[in-house]
Length: 158
Image (cartoon, rainbow, N blue to C red; front, side, top):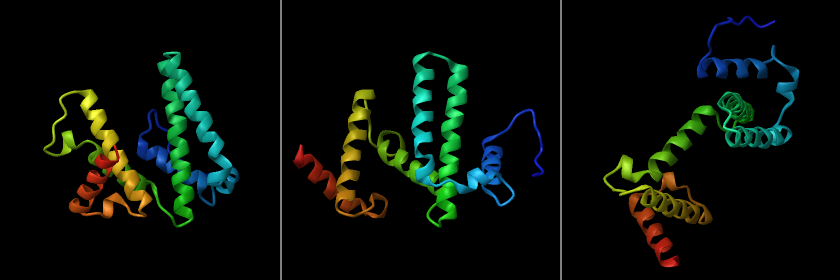
């Protein structure tokens, strides 16, 4: 048995520890045996259950199902970390950089007059990122000049 404190309320940090315990040598054999491939269907099922809760306007169920999706993310992060690929902080870093990059009207000097313009900027940036990937490059490793060059290529392609 793992020594873990029962609390009236748990935080995200607690959940990370709990999932980590499940994957540890003293944890759950089933969790330790899982791979990305073996639990991929679980992610789809949980995401579908989130959509159902939203459609039903059931906030209690939505809260629970979002927790299940979060657990799936934590499981995949631990599997990747144990394989020497990436960890939860790497996922957070990638997501943070993407949000900052795709919101220049918030995190830089650009302006979006309304939601439609913000979405148009978002889509344009996604096209730039896609072009970079097609060229075998990571947008985070590119200079502003290289990104501007890709931006011009995207505009010409439209």
